[in-house]
Image 1 (cartoon, rainbow, N blue to C red):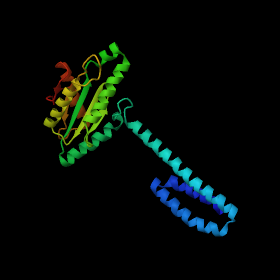
Image 2 (cartoon, rainbow, N blue to C red):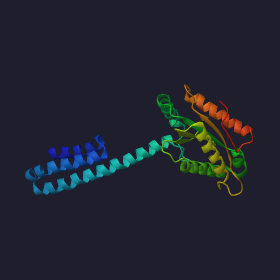
Image 3 (cartoon, helix red, strand yellow):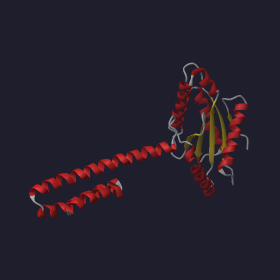
Image 4 (cartoon, rainbow, N blue to C red):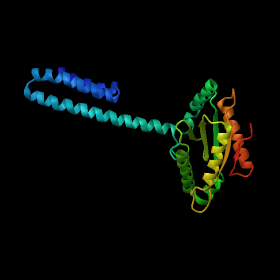
Length: 238
């Protein structure tokens, strides 16, 4: 009867402990019970006990590994956009609150770069949504590779709108990054028969500003870039 409790213990260790610790605990536990079982159980029962206890331990390890992998996938899907692989709006609030607190504590400059694909509706209307999705996917892939610092974050915040959070970046450096992005987008082969351009607004966090006002200023600059003719960067509105 005591042998049956061993199975429950082995399974329970995998559900109560991190995987590595569970593996170590299982090895220690088996190392303790095997000598005792060898001296108290009949040989035929002992063989079945050893085989099943090792099988239960291995199965539990595989089962927990599969569950852990699925949890990671689900957690990633909850915060990323499925088409582009970029962060979605789910984490926007928490991310910006942390950035603003960092700015208030240390004065570290933070800059937003907001991008909108020019004439994207025309792409969908004339070429179809498949081509539109191809453009969005290409934009996401490019931004993911281009904004390579781990401290920076890239979000898809709307249909054809993207947001780049540049950590420890002042307004001049932000302008430089935005202008480089604008030029690079115009040279990307996102569609075979036409050039895809973006309009960009840039805004640096001001003292005492909350993230919603910061976003609004950046959005105003983006809107002005579109009014001025698109395929350009606007930084000046405050």
